[in-house]
Image (cartoon, rainbow, N blue to C red; front, top):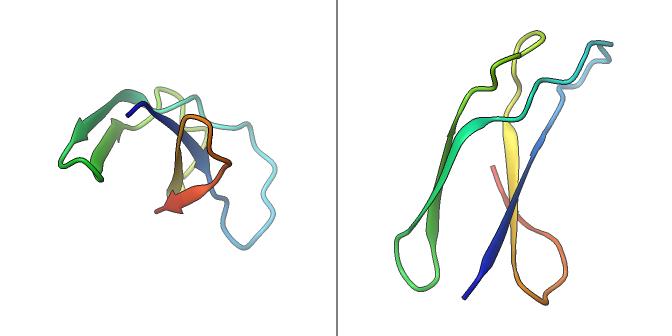
Length: 70
């Protein structure tokens, strides 16, 4: 099955105006079983400040978004 991955940055509880970080680098996905994968990545080249946790969303082709995990 083809799985589409998307990652977004979750900002903390306070408002801070700064430039968004560049995308994460070295993104890899490894199939662990027929129903699970392990996704990893390295920090972005430009963080533009402290990084907050990322939330990864995935879906099978043809399904609606999102299923998510942090």
